Length: 357
Ligand code: NAP
Ligand code: ZN
Image (cartoon, rainbow, N blue to C red; front, side, top):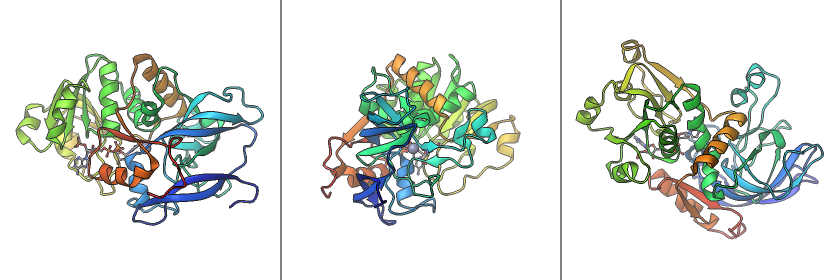
């Protein structure tokens, strides 16, 4: 444990099995400009699963996952006026950036080359960052957002990553205009948020899914206008050329040519899902129709705050299954099997973190 650090209790994966167990470590002592946050809830993003199993080859064990944090401020450092003890706040995918590069200067700090991730990242002092599967986080005030009081704190947690990751490109590419047709590929944590935002923007929303069993909920509770089964060639053909934009959230290798065929000429596809296997993009699939493909990595802090404020005004939260930390390994296995509607959220404050699963 770091000399003089703040003792913290969390859960970590210690090897590529991805199995989590209790882990004691220390965090930096609160500095000027820092906010100390007692973690209430933390979502389980598919990125956590990719990382703890080292599917992206970048795991720095022990990995304390968690980058969808909602918590309550317990203390603030000198110079922090924006937050005070008792405030409900959120922390997302990153907790620092250089502040000096072009991306930081233009409000796109999520693309800073020296971005410090909330979990499994490298802090400016060289330490490996530890995420929100722990009782306390200490974060610079500039990377903390305010969670509207109108939102339930458990349902708000997934907004910190899943929410902003779809909201930000929807705003950037004009996929927030009433009457436009949005396709959402993969109805998981990210996908179900894209459906909710699309409907709140007044769009026509089609879900493209590999799971026929999700049709009823997509069209019912989530309010999508139509539902395509991605491996049903006839359904896909009937919808060809109908969409202004597509958000692809799929976490595993998949064919994107059939998805690009759904776009209108000059339609925009945004890839946010991050399978470890490369996607195949034959030139003809984008040349014919002048189609556009972009990637998107989460969103800036300003986008995240705007998204939370919009969600607060429109009563948009994630559909969550709240679990105790003692269930986290089962939850991760179920996430891997695509068995969650639509986000697991760990009740961190309500869990006994030193008990074993
Ligand atoms: P998730 O809840 O597991 O959802 C992924 C969805 O993909 C599943 O619900 C499933 O939807 C679909 N899917 C899974 N396996 C598939 C397969 N073999 N073929 C076709 N479809 C499949 O995951 P998530 O948390 O939303 O994250 C999704 C991806 O986005 C992950 O790769 C994650 O790392 C990445 N991500 C990226 C960013 C970013 O900034 N770009 C941020 C967060 C997460 P259906 O059952 O409807 O087919
Ligand atoms: Zn995430």
